[in-house]
Image (cartoon, rainbow, N blue to C red):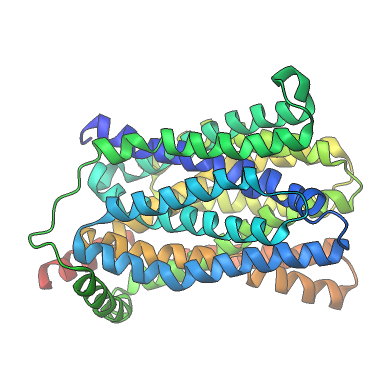
Length: 425
């Protein structure tokens, strides 16, 4: 393996920014937005506001991700862009502390900018994997990042949950103050643990440092070329179709799980516990899947994870007890990090290393499109069948299509095509 300090420093960025994904995006922001910043508003109105905020942030990243990746590859500036988006995310997250009750407009604006910082940074973070690990270690290194993310995000989230449950123990006035302080803690955590990747991961300098105008013009030209290159890289194109299908199913489960639990009558506290279970189970499980990928191949690991997801989805159709929800959360924790880690490492093997940021821009763009098709299909199936539980067959279908297309991804042929393209360029 390459320099272990660089590898660990890279992986710790997952530990850093997962605090935002867990405490802010999945945990406190949706609840606090509805109960504090949108206090007095109709429930459906506050839901609409939050939905529009999430959609707008996702659309911005969908538009920016491939362009940013192309620009970064032109200038050899992955770390510079990572620093910029990290700083944006950190500052905007910390600023949520100052938003007054009822000021939902400010909350939305800061959340959108923080989410753009989080997602934009991931484009360049993912692309840096080609600098910190040899191809044969992508599975293990990618899994290390996700496992540290689950552990780091879970530890801070557990502390933040304790703060909201017992505010006086932490010298806080009430749960609302505890949540606001949690936003500041996430910002500090994100900033502190981002230092290693900025300091110790070395990125080769471009032979010639372009100006901003040249950066943008060159990046846009490269972006246009990427569309042509993906058509030429048949294996990459096939993988991206498979990834879009099964990651859409994964994200649909992630986004629908809490609502599904509430619809079954489970308490919010139980759902928070389930989220913590997923985080802490995900830590060792991601490492295990990294080893599985290294030994048996990333495709085999992905097939195992997809099979488990299908079983979980079928089980969820019959679930009606809270202890079953906990078991479901644990099982999802076993495979969620594996799917994410092995997808990233397999994709990294199939693309030209010198265009990693550009190609990961498309990869992350597809990730932002995830959970668009799944919920729509669930709605159609629910209407046609008259059953919410039966709507989960749509998710099973997405997993099945994703696995079927993944079967035709030939990793060796993909590597050969990438080498040919690198040689031509």
